[in-house]
Image (cartoon, rainbow, N blue to C red; front, side):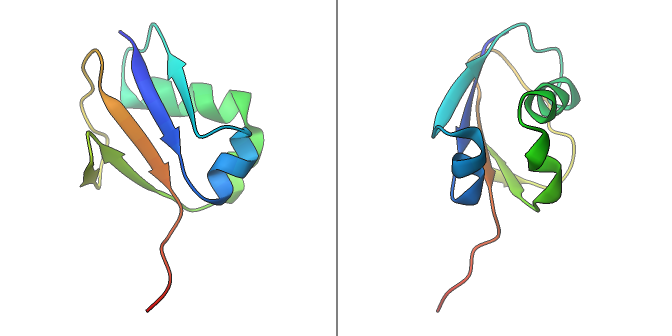
Length: 77
């Protein structure tokens, strides 16, 4: 399956891009491991995950053409 991954804030700086496509993804854990292999610095940051613009709190089920966003914690007023 193909997944579009969006990176925001400092995570976009780490990835040096705002988005990437990943193919042959079997699960969210598979996706996370591939991203961490490609960008090892990601393990040093806290982030939230959204799938198709909805925040998720655990290991989400992914399907072909899903959009997964990695977002650092938000601050502000």
